[in-house]
Length: 163
Image (cartoon, rainbow, N blue to C red; front, side, top):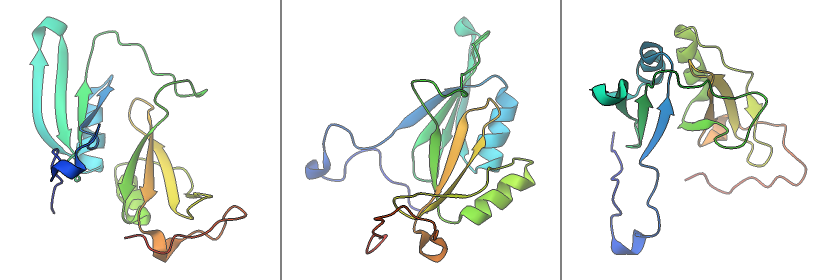
């Protein structure tokens, strides 16, 4: 597996941003979050550091595309408002190549996903589950040519290629 670099390959690719480096998530139960993001989703733990002055853990996890998640613990952090939906981060979405395999793997960890839905604009399949703290997690199937949904919005024009 080839990991993408966090730096542009050439000056012509340099812009304001080159991509996502990391996403930081405050968790209530670090063990449950590690099980979810590392064991169930397949992330790789890069480092775990306790910061005594903050009474806080910081765990760095690398995703297959090179992006990272940072898991933090903070004493007495308030719970996240997920429902009803509020302003700010709505959900975290991961690209997947085989949605059915992801759902089956998550099921092996006792994680239940919502029924598969269809993106009304692309025809791609996706589903959601929640992380241990209730953060909505989406799995969006890339290159869904073998599983394109048939329920599409009027005026849907499928892309010529997913490459």
